[in-house]
Image 1 (tube, rainbow, N blue to C red):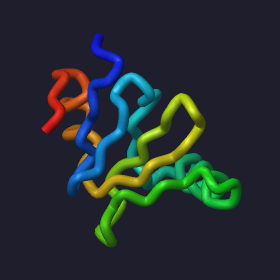
Image 2: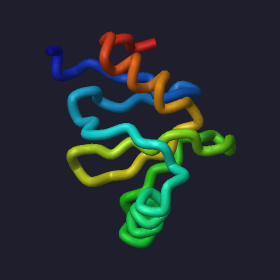
Image 3: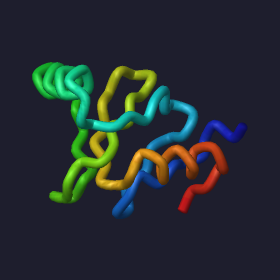
Image 4: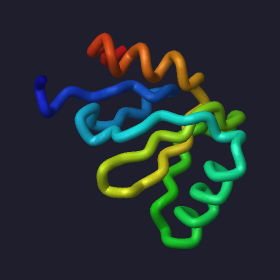
Length: 84
């Protein structure tokens, strides 16, 4: 795997693909708690461009990235190596 491969998480926002640990739905109580903790600790990155949060991306650096793209779409891009 190319360690420099970028993953498009929507609206021109990219993350380094090999740093992604999980892509999860934002609606469950544990994810809401995780999101709030990340916000308090300064580890929350909002890449939604003001749109509804549809996925939370967890990285190996323990950052939580909010995305307006569906979990399934991001997961398919990650699995396929699709950068667009």
